[in-house]
Length: 174
Length: 291
Ligand SMILES: Cc1cc2nc3c(=O)[nH]c(=O)nc-3n(C[C@H](O)[C@H](O)[C@H](O)COP(=O)(O)OP(=O)(O)OC[C@H]3O[C@@H](n4cnc5c(N)ncnc54)[C@H](O)[C@@H]3O)c2cc1C
Ligand code: FES
Ligand code: FES
Image (cartoon, rainbow over all chains, first blue to last red):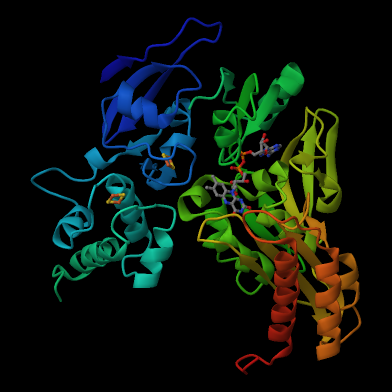
């Protein structure tokens, strides 16, 4: 288990030790209560795949899985992750074995600048876990908490359909 | 953006949470889904000295039917639980219609119905739904339990009727008189936005005769509005076109919208009337027939 000290200003408010299972690995950190989960992941644990876009709970770029469910990590406190499991984009797949959602984004060109992509993929992962055979509408609806400024969404929807096909049939081009 | 500094407490029981509130008075705030409170704290619109996180308290995540078509919704029942509920479809048409329209899918993972009622945002969808259904909240404090009708609980913009040492443990929908019908319609600029205008409709009827009606309006006033006269116009009536028109007019008259970036006051009033007409016309048409 690795442990991280997050820098805190001197204050009467004590830091808290939290232990979070991040991408399957137990990580410990001493955090100020007001530290946001997004910042624990990015600054504390160096997992910069989690992006902070709007910082106002609107864009979903910071989406991670919290005990398997998609949450906006800019709107949760790091202390709330104590004893819980968090999956970031770094834990979605490995370079040699991508998650089908990641493969779908490659195959269907589901990104342009890529800023929204980590959050988009984790939201898509959660969507497919709940509904393995989504319609295009289900996907648009399910990803409606994640904004993309570049793609116009068309290829993102295709990417998720691709992943769903692959997971159900093994053949995304069927 | 960081919230200002606060102490964080994560009680494991309701008694512990109540003790923390009693100890810290108006310095303390409850953290439920955090989907309104955390953004407010980041913007420094709220700066509680102590945050009492109730997410670790077991037994509050439920929602369940009670005898006669009532419903209890625990303080940690999330929007997403209601969206995917197997209890609501059929039994609670107004709630089932509203659940997928609250915020966006990621916010719905965390946000709670009870938290939404407590937040008392005039644009909150659940307050209208619960008001139309004649619902209430159950608050607990060291002095005991009390039940507060939603109409008395939401006292103003972002203001509820709780004392500092009270926690809402559940929201309750009373049993229906006869069969339930109704819906929730919301106009939003884009998916996930707050309502430009929303209307909750809840009807209870026997043999085509309406015994109880509730209509409440979202986003068209300084607080959630009960369109009482519009609802009363439906009681004892059958849904003839003139009755429907009358209810639509009365509901629009009850709205107190302001012109803002979501639309003009007149436009919002028009939307309210249209929604009322649309929902009542749909109830009137036999299932499957064109309205
Ligand atoms: C981008 C975005 C879009 C949104 N869109 C909508 C929308 O379209 N419609 C809508 O209705 N809402 C919307 N919301 C708000 C969302 O529904 C919140 O989940 C809800 O308003 C508050 O519920 P919560 O559980 O998150 O409460 P919290 O944020 O945890 O708490 C809100 C307030 O209630 C108090 N509180 C919470 N629970 C209790 C309790 N059990 N007892 C006493 N006090 C309590 C807290 O102290 C706080 O003051 C949106 C939010 C975001 C971020
Ligand atoms: S950065 Fe969290 S929702 Fe935009
Ligand atoms: S690819 Fe640029 S924001 Fe989505």
